[in-house]
Image (cartoon, rainbow, N blue to C red; front, side):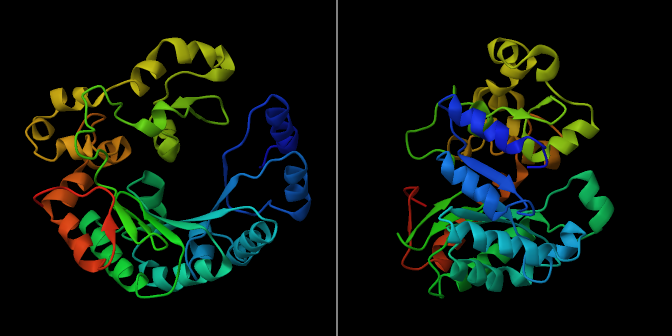
Length: 318
């Protein structure tokens, strides 16, 4: 939204018969005028608004008043009929605020809250010290949070990155460690289904393996072409970018002995490549968070803290 011609771009997208599915924003530039323009052209994307916990948002954003402005933007979107998904980074400093934050967002009418473990990126370590939760600490604290959340009357969905998705309205949950249900696995699956269908392009035109950690790739000089130099079509037809996003899970099995011999591999499909890179420093290495999820018994632990809920991906004989 920082682009001076942001609404011109949005309008041209719709003029060409395309649409905007969602908009990631901190909410700062969302105004009634912008929302009115969007509604006029039929643009009602899912607003994914970053909100990092009651009393902690200003610290993480390093801007006084950011929390108040973000809550204003969330209210404004909901009042205008735009669906809102809050995206919350969790770390040692704000983990105790997750339940009251979830209650606040649910009361406001937010559709879903996505909780994301702030990960091992260089800038995060530089600015936040030891605030990053270890993977097992993250899983355990999220179990505690979920156990308390289901005792409330909140109806907002909860999506805990790399862990689970909870739907209170349907009384169901999906363990995020499971990528494939029974008999769904095949060697030809892409290592990342998200990136297989979504190009990660930076403002400078660089194509990244994943937009979630584009800063990491930029810092390491790792990108897969540039659309400002060559256009997008070329990279969707051949080259490093296409090779990367079309890599299959078979390549992980062939690369990693641990994955090849793991009884859970057909369920996790090698996990998240971002986590694999950050935790094992290997593009085809094991996603150690998925290893912990299965080996640490978190499938059973989720079942124990969610009485009355049904897993949409049950594993027989667990």
